[in-house]
Length: 369
Image (cartoon, rainbow, N blue to C red; front, side):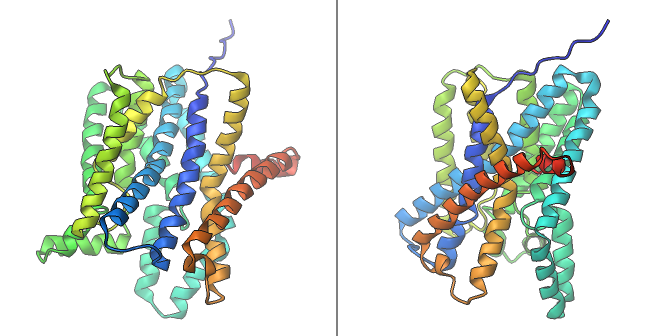
């Protein structure tokens, strides 16, 4: 008797959220950078601190959303087919590996330029640091996400019992706390002269510790937990989302105002905000054929945008920076132009890739997003 295939539940709202998160990530990599480098509209006033805190909080929440949703969907599929667990894990990691290689080749001119710059200056230590960062965070230009996701998924998949999941959650939580001190609160080490602070400062500066393996694990674990329970019935759940977000903004505002803020990559209230947000999103059960078609398209564009936009901005900065007069960074308001161009380009290129993948010799393009 043949085994019937299990029909997996589709979550259109998650694909739409991933697309919105991709738009936030594009903004994260252009607007804060442009405002800081151009020093436009920045001062020490409280409104400026609140504005930047709000901007960092809402944009930075986008990256954990990708981790949690990817983890949730993978482990949900595994829960439906437990006997094929490692097959699914293997397929998932191979897909990430292909994305890594494909987009590494796309960014190869920039990588060669960076390495050549180190070598031409005779900076051996700089080249070693460049290699260490590449191995730690994945290939340059934002591919750390692919490395982190594969790394954390395999570790999480190895925990099969309730006890092992509890232990992993505690370990992931402690790693996240340490990660916070290497990000938002990293300035504390700059203000201290003790040997421990100096050592942590050196390691953090050398490795450029940002939202990486240390902090990502807690969100992959959260995705697996949600895949087992889907939603938690919490009274007043929806009201905790704005409360957790306000606490994030307050946390960033305080750290920026007192001068310990360094990087807006990880802060204590972020996992709490993501938990309540996902809990609400998973309770939304909308099934509509037209919505499903739109959501699937947005999911493809969102994935493509996540991987492509960093290349776009690096090439853009490379071209305009070489003229010695980068008009986009000198005039902060003009950054909206490359932002819109990037989003439209992502729509166009993803559609083109999807069309070209119909040809047998270009079928691999379908796996590039």
